[in-house]
Amino acid sequence: MCGIVGAVAQRDVAPILIEGLKRLEYRGYDSAGLAVIDRHSVLGRLRRIGKVSQLEDALNHEPVRGGTGIAHTRWATHGEPSERNAHPHMSGDITVVHNGIIENHEELRAELRGKGYVFESETDTEVIAHLIHHERKSSETLLEALQKAVTQLDGAYGTVIMDRNDPDLIVVARSGSPLVIGQGIGENYVGSDQLALLPVTHRFQYLEEGDVAEITRDKVSIFNFAGEPVERELIDSDLDHQAGDKGEFRHFMLKEIFEQPQAIASTLEGRLTDSHVAVEAFGHNAREIFEKVGAVQLIACGTSYNAGMVARNWFEDLGIPCRVEIASEFRYRRAFVPDNCLFVTITQSGETADTLAALRLAKEQGFMNSLTICNVPGSSMVRESDMAFMTRAGAEIGVASTKAFTTQLTALLMLVTAIARSRGRMTEEQESQIVSDLRGLPHAINEVLELKDTITELSEDFADKHHSLFLGRGTMYPIAMEGALKLKEISYIHAEAYAAGELKHGPLALIDSDMPVVVVAPNNELLEKLKSNMEEVRARGGQLYVFADRHARLVAGEGVKVIPLGEISDQIAPILYTIPLQLLSYDVALIKGTDVDQPRNLAKSVTVE
Ligand code: AGP
Image 1 (cartoon, rainbow, N blue to C red):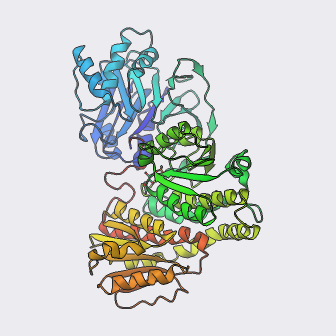
Image 2: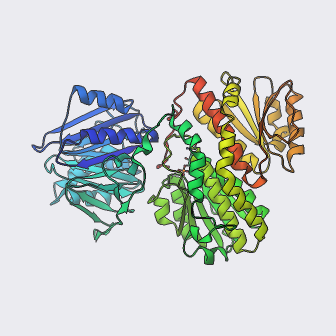
């Protein structure tokens, strides 16, 4: 989704803006632009369709310089990707970048046209530029004009504005779309993600809903929606400056797949005792809350939803009622709220618009408490939930989620254990076994990663296919869903996941030699059932690719390839069986030559509905 960078400094900020935009490329975009003002109030603006590198080339050919600047990567919502629709947008001396969607843009457009404004783009953002320009005429300051303008906006915005007549400041506003202020020495910055600003600062203040702020070189003044001055916590980020580098890997996705042992070790660090999950890791009052939990409602989107599907099996196996729902569905229906129901959001970014809206709705619906399982400290979901459990996966840049998913599963298994123990639904021995399995995860993942070359060979069989099927049962059904999501996301091969028992209720009709069927087959009590499903596929000439426990006695042969994994305990099998599916989708995408880290039409963080 769109990205924002802004800076006020004594030096030329164009390089800071370009570097910041490059670090936001992973969010997905189709055009990029920047504007800078120098100390003589001369403004330069450049916009290009395509990559930030094209904007950088343009900057090298037609240099624009200045100490105050704003920049943007645009992901088209209103109006096609074009230079005309790219940000920054201007109205006279006012220049604006914006993330989000202004829902009442048509009404405002009509009103502003009536006042004589001429629109040059099809974007909703241009409305903000003209509105502020209009309000500026009757306001003492740019900040006051912004405060008047935002009262007229419906929808979501993170917006940053400059005025050519006030060359030493930028003003910003946040409602529904994240903005973080970065504090430097003698210069200050703003971004839609702290990652953009890591080369220049590690000191951040997240704006809250309704905040506006004025940023100069040596001062940051923040005001809440009522216009009162407020302080927002100053956070020292421990994110590594190198977080945005691929290192020795060809793609971020591959790097992130191989980072999983370390990422999971971080998720666990300091949160396990010899034989217990530390309940306090979920919050200082978690023990008291968990003792009362009667049911759990999990809410998420995409990959995070698949993690929730696995966790539902874990919870209900232990007799704890659990429902899981896609955020965009939950937010538009009347959900039944069981007594003492804990509301849990699962989100890598902490900013997904639908999940955030569901969390806000849940607060009005009588859920007991809210908890978020999240990877981004300081994100909206972390700030707005009663409790937050950070997955500590480190920055995930590839649009296709990998280490975020396996760390979510790890966190969820810890949550299930903590709640089950608090509710007397799990014995000490069971907990101790889970703790030992969790501790062994980093090593076990390293072993699975050794399958890389075998999977690379296998991927050749998929590259010319147009469709594929992924099958699993129990906790492996959501893992099949995740495998299918990965493949379709980055290789553009149509991939569908089915609970294997559903085969003969429809999808069996699709089976032929052109339809590879991937099966996730650990050695559990559903294995025999799964074998029957595989026979159904085989009897119809389907090609099976089976990821199976080496003790499952599955034999490769005509139409069946078996990729053996080690002996894996039931509880952690979903985490380990995910890894070969990630590798498979990566290798297939590589052969197909798609943009692995930034697949077409997708964005890393979906901050609009
Ligand atoms: C998966 O590879 C995608 N990146 C996507 O499905 C993602 O999981 C979804 O958009 C939810 O994002 P979140 O975890 O940041 O809320």
